[in-house]
Length: 613
Image 1 (cartoon, rainbow, N blue to C red):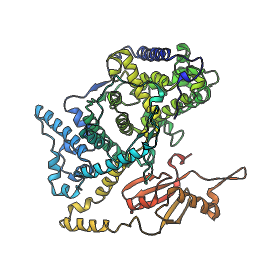
Image 2 (image 1 turned 45 degrees about the vertical axis):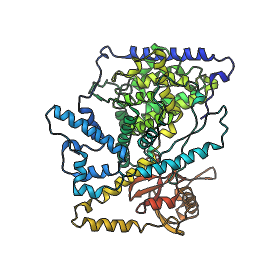
Image 3 (image 1 turned 135 degrees about the vertical axis):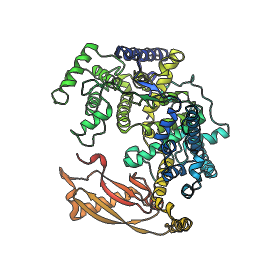
Image 4 (image 1 turned 180 degrees about the vertical axis):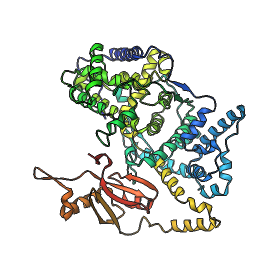
């Protein structure tokens, strides 16, 4: 996304005026948030977890609660631990050690040591050689470095920002560990914050033969495992970067008697799904963003110019009473009032949009010096958000990106939009925030806005599942499917048999093969044969599917409009084997996928977002 600065257009503020205007707008938003707070807002709706409680909550969220409860079911613990890298496992051990120390102070039974888990015969059989994978990691990083050098070798570096290469095949914490050993990890210097939009480089993610996996491409069961592994990797990464992040535990608070403002996101989405199945974000927010896209993108100073407070209160009351009755008219609403309603909706959520648990982690990103390290942490944090929060944040960022693209008309560039919106996301009455109390005022605004502009600019990258996490999920599923083998007395014989079976996987260099693909389109169900070659991609399979569908008797699944053929919105799903359900990227190389998951089925069906509509 190329965002042009104000100085590129005539009659626009000078850089000094631009900085002052953005700074004033930032603190104006802060004052608005403070004035909107309830009289008893000095009493926080969250509290910092007590000594030991932090680690206990962390172990529960990471799927390692049996280490706290002392249950004897070793298999689930060992299977998860067996997928971890060396640096990730060390982060787990630090949390367990800290929890054990706190328990001893309180004279409780200490948590079990990780070595105790791996010491049992059951656990030992489950553990592959992942803890000794450091040479493989170094080899991957060496190949990455070569790719990085070749990618930039032909660029003219004079006066230009070089592209950043974003690697997802190697765990983010392992990348940081290697750079730390090589003394190449930049020192944190939060006082330096580039404000010009052009200073953000293009970030290139090397193409993987298994394609790109986005957060909505995986089943909820697999995404739960992604979140557990992402929490462990983010914690290990923050440990290496020297970031101490304390989570806050949200306490129960009285929910106001309203149907739009101040209602928990999950409750809003759940009730709206009764009206519109499969909706991902609140219907009110969808309507509000749609109105702003139609009427507000060309409005000068949109988001920055405040609306009328009296009109906003009246509009809010009317919306509460008539939105779900479909009797509210947007004709008389000004874009500035609608923008103010948008910010008010976000501010009045009973919990921060970035969640009370992770708000301080998002804020801590400002203290990381290296851009790629910032993006690594943000990527993992986005994966950790609950689904309603993550989907709502994405919808908001997509709208803000459109505002930036219309800069020449609305005079709101990336930095201006980020400065205005940062307080609304990073300041919340339920969670104390350092953004409003630490350091010089200008530094506060710049550091908060810097995180916001990264979320806006790199949102497509941040909403993907890194390849290393998907590989760990596959390994976790594979190990879980072999649980029955851990209880057999002839375990060594069975493990040798598994090893022999793994050698029977098809060779990547073998000839063509035929693969049966299932088709499921509502009541329409049939099979199709696809000739698989080493260069076959998911897009090739979809092309063959549409050709056969058009020519066959099954073409009743097609829609005829104005004499042209409209195909249903379908996708290929990888189902079973070492994955729950995975919507494939069109650029996925199917032969590599088959070798990666020979036990999985391929099913062509309607996309999840298209069902029920």
